[in-house]
Amino acid sequence: MVSAHNELTYDSKIEGDVIVTRADAVINWIRSNSMWPMPMGLACCAIELMAVAASRFDIARFGAEVMRFSPKQSDCMIVSGTVTYKMSSAVRRIYDQMAEPKWVIAMGACASTGGMYRSYAVLQGVDRILPVDVYVSGCPPRPEALLDALVKLQDKVKRERSFSKLNTA
Image (cartoon, rainbow, N blue to C red; front, side, top):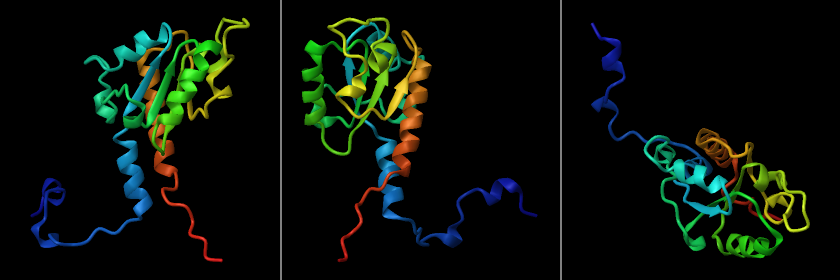
């Protein structure tokens, strides 16, 4: 009699079998589960961004605990807070220095739409200078909302094409 538990354990009879999958699937699985965020904490939302790395919320569960402050070592920029026009060129320069592939999360109302600041000095959404992949609403958004955005970004990355089509013409 074989129990259900034994069926799910390691079976030495299939040792050495080959697993076949698409290269896209493997590469995107690796990319989605090892994102290294570039934290762009520009205002009060940065406090919530910092909280997400603490043990209570533990961003490490999602493979994104390696916060890098070097754009060359990052692949996911998290823009949290108010982006002013004066700061926008620095944000864009840091984004341009990040290696491909790269993604952007706009965290909070200010990063997404300018928030409550309708002035000549505030950029009305970081999507005017960067291609945003996921928006996080709130003022400030809870750390759980950022984790939800990270999961949504991981799902998006898993569906992307890793290789461009070869030109056969």
